Length: 205
Image (cartoon, rainbow, N blue to C red; front, side, top):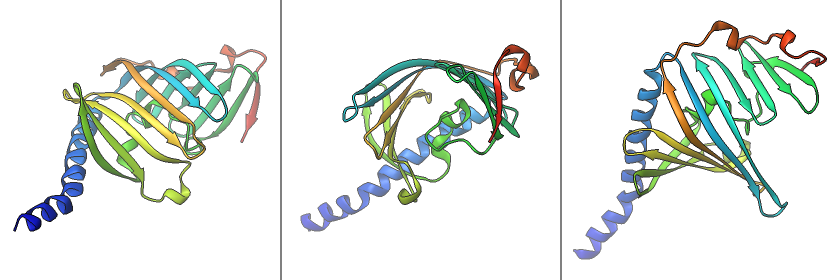
């Protein structure tokens, strides 16, 4: 009888873990979607022990619907929901493409705050202080550049950090510093204005 009880607990634990993680993520999505717009301030760290990469930078982003504007290190990314402009200070160039053509590993602020919603299975790992730790795994790992995403969600239902673990050993961690919902954002924020970037070459991808 004891064996059957233990077996039942071991067999059902993964389902309970997934149910708990999904419930937390559903509540988080509902909260974020309740905002007509938001601003996020974050710190980013990129590490790879094999290649010796250890970089730290900061970022900030404005989101309204499908539109976003983010400043990440030396780059600025702007999307009006149809077009995407990636402004590279190092290249002195603006790369123009369709809004859906971003690289998988690039996280604009809209994607950062909703990454768990599509293409992943989830698992509740543990509670760490006042944060829930949840792992995400790609449902189609063969087509993904990363194998695990680790989320930390506070018990008050706020996203605290996102860590993306790539297959090549790179780990990218985004730590939320500030979040403001329902802010007023001028429409010009989501349109590339070449007058702000004199001398930059425009490249259509």
